[in-house]
Length: 526
Image (tube, rainbow, N blue to C red; front, side, top):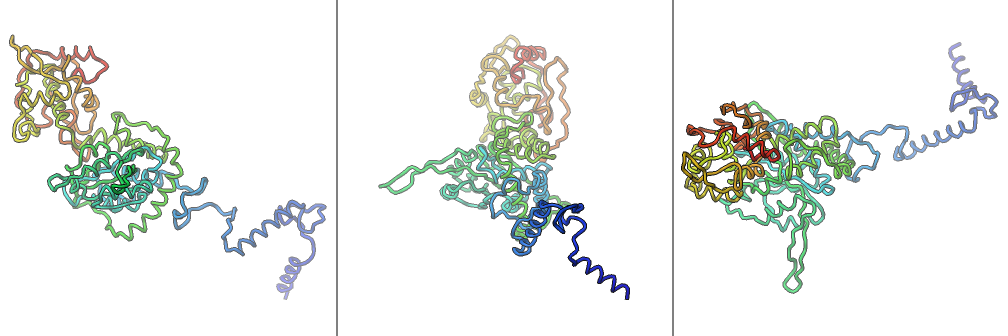
């Protein structure tokens, strides 16, 4: 039985007392070491420490960290432990935001590619709202019910920080809920709250939503009985999302908001069924990743001054600043994606509503630009305004716009009628240049024609050379939403006009001369 004898001999050699040929730790020759197993005391110490560590791991069932194991994400998010310590495992920001976009797109059919990334950035900012100076309002509106507004809120409540989803809530309740710090308010059916036709009179709530987009905002209220009345300042800063039918939102709120116009799904568009308990379970790790990552980069985001797209300024720049900073911190494609979304919602889609005065300035500039003139008598200007088919100028509270109402509306912008000579006669009218002219109001309340010409909704050529003033062709729209009255229209692009009469007294060359005299104010030559 030679095989058995060989095996026994190998066992005897392994357990025998003969010294090892090489060091058990480093594998080199023991040389002249007095130890039968190691070449030096250092190797012996290292080997002993490793053996004791392995024994301890076995004894405590892995509760002691093993430095030899690689760092991996836990299967179950440990968000209940608080923010992850510095240096802990962290997914890249662009992967976190990509996962959120994929998740929300499963349950909603958005009108364009900018909506889901904007939602992901907005959800992310709620986790560090206490570190930001501004939190943009989010408005979800639609022309008809059943367009997916509520679904966006239902999914979003499992991704934002400290969600409070409600249909009806009083300002007093909000004051007390915000005492402990910002929460994320998700209002559904907000059109019923602010609709005057249904008796909506919520000035306190509107004031709260207006002021609460900045971190320093407070509302003072008297608290206590008549004997011990004290003034208490309640913080009202909080991220807010509002959903409702379009048309009922106060302008003071929409100017502080990013508005997504939801639409009904086409019959060929499909989304996954919304089962709340499944969505809650699947959203939990995404929410944990959002919170962990945003907390890690909170300092970077809070102190960032991101570059913004051309045409984004003032309050629009203010409310987009935190979202652009988050995108820059995420890296990957997100800086470019966020700026495309910003440009779409601010420059291309434009505001959903403007005041009557700004609309009047806009239409008058369109008429003057189309006629290539720098002056027009009141009667003729009114005729042009009445000829705008989709304009409101023939029905202002049951009356057409007349010369008195026109002068009153324009006077708010320091534009006043002047004497205009026509065929030797002096009549009242309006001029582009000079004191009380239209140029200054245009430059202050309307975007420059160069900006309007690059808009995805409309285009108007700049009038600066004595060329034949033929109307430019209207380009096809590329945005998912359309402003009722575009920023600048081409001659026949917005409705049917009466045939224009020849210019009264001016020429294109005179308009160009005005432009040459005032190069620093883009609107004054228009």
